[in-house]
Image (cartoon, rainbow, N blue to C red; front, side):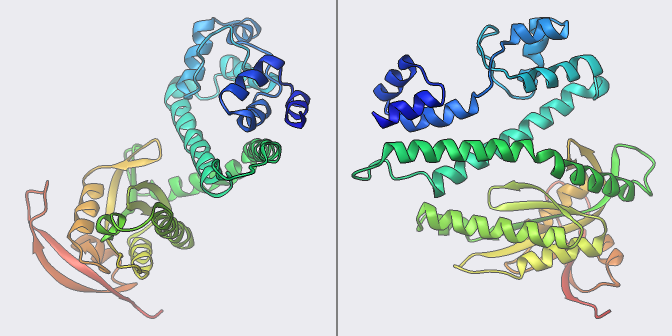
Length: 342
């Protein structure tokens, strides 16, 4: 059969093909073989080459979120071994290496999950479709996986730019703080009012389109104003910006878009925040979240200090003194108005 010949050309054994056929996994096997290309080493092999123990190698790769079910399973390539040697011998990340490797692993895991989801939701054929061409599907999956590996190998170029930008942001955010764990930033949250009832009466495809449009707009707006999307939390995004004016501009521009009965609202607070692993914590973050919860659809709320800091860029309307959960004192709340002409 053509599919068998194609899989053997990718390196499949007769046993692998037979097992894949029993599980209706022939196309998937093609993709698996591409991902496994070049794998000739075990964790034990890499430990011997780097002069360390198998337990150390297993711990390091598991810290990065890579499942190694057996130290004698062939699953690593020469590139993996070079990276392993670099981590063992050079110790490039110092005493906090474990923390950085966990961040690296979790970040790349998210990229991988997103890549798989995009393929499944947009390119994978309907498995129940009559006359499904398994060979074409197998070739397609192999091509997609090869492209994904090519993309991963090219991430160093993007990472260099991201490192440069991260260093610039860090220097600016710590220019006026005394503690190295603190950054002075604007923190904002924008969520979608009406998302839950909308999700109950729409198709998964339509729901994904709404989420995608919201997240895409948030990313573009934050980047345009010198900010950064920190994370997505369900139907909410959290961002940071270098100053109060930029934070208000990001929240205002994101909330300016609405549709399908869903309207964004936001909250922004400027001040000193604790930073760890690219995320942010502290009262400023909590206050921004509470202000977003308090806002009405289409509105952005800030506290008095943030309003004063951004007064040159925006007009603000007083929105009363509010008792917010987790805060002992009443908070002077202001609503972000129109931008002040330059």
